[in-house]
Length: 366
Ligand code: GDP
Image 1: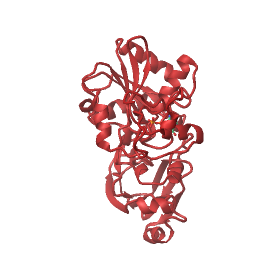
Image 2: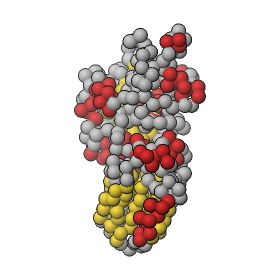
Image 3: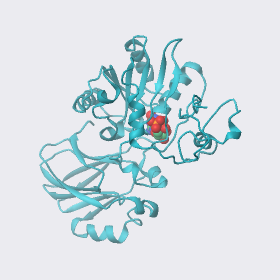
Image 4: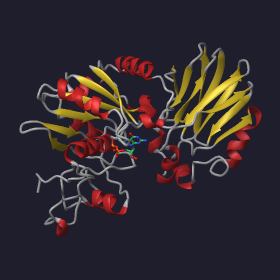
């Protein structure tokens, strides 16, 4: 039994603990395709089940590849680069060549300057301690950019294994499914899921007689809003289509609420635009700064939602960080939620987010 892996998520199949990864009832073991109960339900009923696995388990599993030879493809979510770029990746995977693949490009406006973005990503990777051999912009769902990426993988892997590494929910399963589909025409080989943390264990897809493409477990990043919210709210804040930038002309002493999950106060500076990149489903409210606290107190969970009731029970209170923005073309990033681009700069803002979600500034890439 120890050697049998779930063909969906790659977790080792076990029949003793329904709350742990890889559980399946004994009666299902004689089926041709063995799926753990979680993947079975996901595949047939679109239903997500939680399993308990610690962050340490994730790190242990991934660090197993440290001493093996191979090429690493690090997948990041272009809509959440700050939350999905793995800092100090070489410490986890060892000294391997790394290709950076920025997934979910279909979410960015079509007018995005791709060369500028590639340069920006290369710098962001370097700052995170990852020196990359190449940067590729892809959409696993749409299949965009995959031919270029697979060609690069083939050239750079030197007939060695290929490890696909990324945080939970960056789209690793979708990506590998797409590759398999393109090469073999089979669909749904690996379970894909909407919710973070659902790909557990390794899964191998043979590349030739000796080598394989290996899907590693999604390393969990707790610094993301996605950890503290209900499944329903997660659906609302996760963009599914091209994000339409929403532009607000604000005077100082005005504020924006992003649902009731985050807030941005324009404290000081001349009137200017705030360009908001969030899921089109997330409502943005403009208010006067002096009314902002009251609005949250009275309408959080109602007019200002998400959060829904379930999220309200889990999410920490909003706390503020003040930023002085000197230069234009700066993004104020709420990891996992979205960002606001400030075209002109020379201003002071206060950004509110749940305590464990650290707002940061970056040079704008759009
Ligand atoms: P994993 O946890 O890294 O294996 O991620 P999954 O493959 O399960 O994908 C997580 C979520 O991201 C799912 O809802 C996917 O449909 C979505 N997703 C994956 N790739 C893309 C993409 O290229 N574009 C968009 N818009 N969504 C994607």
